Length: 155
Image (cartoon, rainbow, N blue to C red; front, side):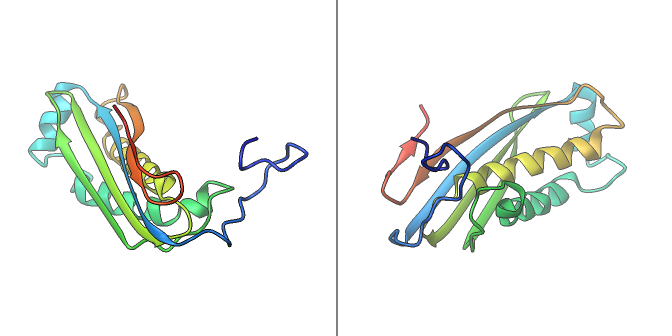
């Protein structure tokens, strides 16, 4: 049975009140693909709407902090640390990486995934006038640690 389903198969929030508090960490990633000309503009800080990375980082942090308000069955967590960075993978792709850390009773995977997703959506919003073909892709959990289920690392 899924932990988010009760005995009748209906959605419910998982009761974490009896769980032990441990250090919880998660890393997630996403990619945003552009036309080469648009990525060149981003590199040159030539996008009219402003500093794309500063705004996308701020948005990603807010996304992580508000995950419990956005995903119906997620717990509202006090996050201890959020780090978001951006890498140019090639002439068309920016990779977004998020690292989230908390000392608590439940994991922070959803917060890391929310961080990269909201960062990617912010980048899309800031560049959509320049490129209608922008793709947000490959959003996934890279690793997580803490809690009963232990460590997960994507191959």
